[in-house]
Image (cartoon, rainbow, N blue to C red; front, side, top):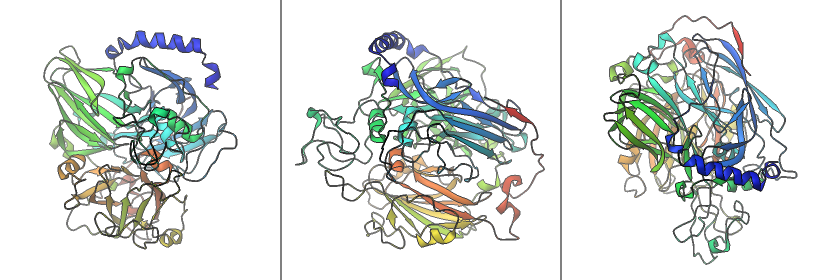
Length: 630
């Protein structure tokens, strides 16, 4: 195990190396992750292998043992960038080379356990849920094989992949089991040269929390109950006597959005892999959010040409915080895509807000020479250096070019007044407080879902209830399969290919649970704060989402959001969950069912691969060549 192979002498050498490197870490150029692709410009059949193994990572600011993706013999803090084309048939073999899980571990459903079990989720891809299933997991020594058939009309854009093993996803994502996915365009999709030929950088933003969250008095914030002497489930004796609260209520209070450190998450799962973390500069660690890294690097430098547009493909590859990105100095930011879908008009931003799991393609233009900070949640996470020698000056994308992009049928506009919803569904993403020191009271991470959640506070007057027939609250009960009756009996959604779904989502409290739906993007129809709510700022909500946008992660403030999507291509069980991944691990997850289209229906409803958003079709020749990658 790492704890035995990492000696005190090795630790001292690592610390000395880190101290030397940290002094010049800010000057290091941004390094893109290695690319995994077919290497072709036309769709093809190809395959590759990823291995998950324990790995000692070091980036000049921090060194520690973790679980990493390994490709072509190299294990890295952030996995390789997978590039695919619409129409690719891509086979990915995932090998779990980790050691055994803890002997005799408690594998209770909706609890943290099995730290060395893994799988892989392609976040945001419009892909068959039978393939991109989170219910298949590779135990230590096992292998999973994923056969991805990328739809021919798949929208080009920025996506990502990560571990989604229910019970360990929070630990694994913070530890670095993440990577970018880029869907490159085909010519018929009419992507302008200002995008397809742009100077671009992939920015996989990760977060590492290195210590327990404490308040201004040094008391540990409680993630389990009010007035706990110390979180009895997750902290397992890690609190010092100076940090202990009293049962009378003194000290830090309860917060369901408590930031857990990597070591706390490891202890929660029962992991025996000691991180042996070494930090070069404690001054560079935020006491609450820890540190943010870009492509695994500590404060790298991105060089741009003065006056020229550069595209940053930013991925919030996190499961514990929302991100707010900004660049100091004379630089303008224009978002051209959210969650892998190009907008129809650029959005000028001073700060780009991303929920956990979201992506934004941001065109940056710096008008003056100099070095500016790239800040994430106010934390200096890198530098943008602008100079005349910074590269070729390229033009920004225009709104007219964005409008001219051909979009797939599954992204056909549903905002029109003539669009009628065939199916209605509702979700209420909330949490409660366990009031006892044994955490035996009402559970924290549950949510409601059903035909109508508008009656539940704060939109309505009802309190969350497991017995409700319109919005029953509960925890993830495991996969339900493909029998409609299993879903209807639980008041869950059953829809069919081709049907227009209208969802209304609600939230509770000052913070937002990021709601993520697999496979399907949803279009924002409206977003309205609860009247008189002190916990929802309409201007802030409008900055998060704009009517007409397509997203796969949504904020759930004290507000009502109306969302629509038409299920196309893929029948089967589809997952939705909170993307604060510890919440998901503990049960804030659910599934819905998509059934096959009725016989004789519109062909775009059952196989939209060759349908544009207006229903027009095109001819496509399937790939026949095969390429293998290690």
